[in-house]
Structures are given as structure tokens and as C-alpha cells.
Amino acid sequence: MPKIDPKQLTKRYYSIGEVAELLGLSTSVIRFWEKEFDEIKPHKNSKGDRRFTPENIMQVQRVYELIKERGFTINGAKQEILRNKSWDKKRKRTLKELAELRNFLLEMKRQIQSPK
Image (cartoon, rainbow, N blue to C red; front, side):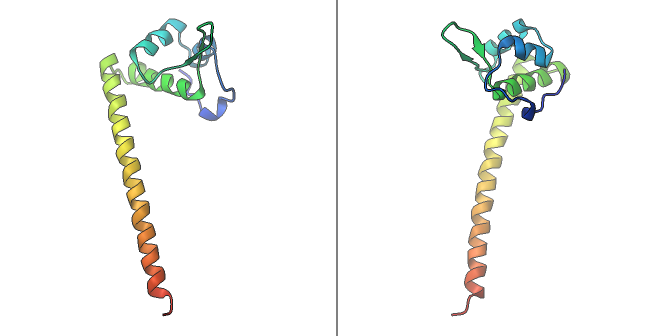
């Protein structure tokens, strides 16, 4: 499967046929994964046509990597996605705490260096 760079995705929405062509998948596989993975939720227009955002396309690509390239089962891929979400939350929280600590230390440094 060709690796899609998010910068290549210039349109706001893509049809399921366009997504299938971009990723080298059948539309039925994309529809199946949409049912299996809560992360893949394309917008639907009034006729019910799926409209995939670039973020949706990257999610489909991630599922492809887990299942087709790394050999995960559907359930294994779901668990891996949940693990990654949990790790991302912890990472963001840690980065926020480090930024707060940095700001505190910079303020302390400023107070020490400023003449009284």
C-alpha cells in the first residue's frame, strides 16, 4: 500500500472510491473496517454517501498497517489503537506538566537574577 503523506491530502472530503484508490483497497474493505473500528467515522451527506476527511484517511491507513502489514487481528488492532490513545493522553499530560515546570523554573530564575 502506498504511504499517504497528510500534506498530499488537499481536499476537504474524499469519496469512498477515491479513498479506495489512494490506499489500494476495495470499497467493501473500507466499509467493513468502518463498522469494526469506531475511529473511522466518515461524514455522510443527505444521500448517505460517505465523505472521508484527511484524518479519516489516515485512520484507515493506520488500520491497514496494523492488520495487513503487522499481522494484527481485528481485535488486536482495536487493542493497539486503544493502547496508543492511552499513551498519547499520558504523553500530552506529561508534556503539559513539563511545560508548567519549565515556566516555573524560568520565573524562579528571573526572580533570582532581577535586582531588588
